[in-house]
Length: 61
View 1: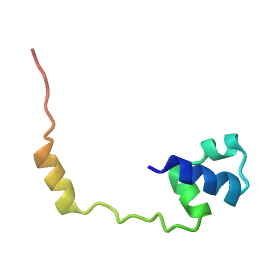
View 2: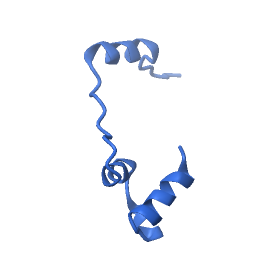
View 3: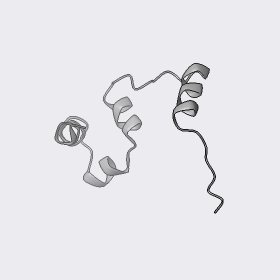
């Protein structure tokens, strides 16, 4: 993540104070900067792929 660039955009571009900047979530900052931060929701196929790759396990020793 380009923190220096984001800080410049927040401090200089948006006029935020450091505390205001650091209290924002990345999504809030992107929205304030006019960046479309929307990401598609995870579909069932991707969920099943992840479940197969990282199965739930229990350790019963």
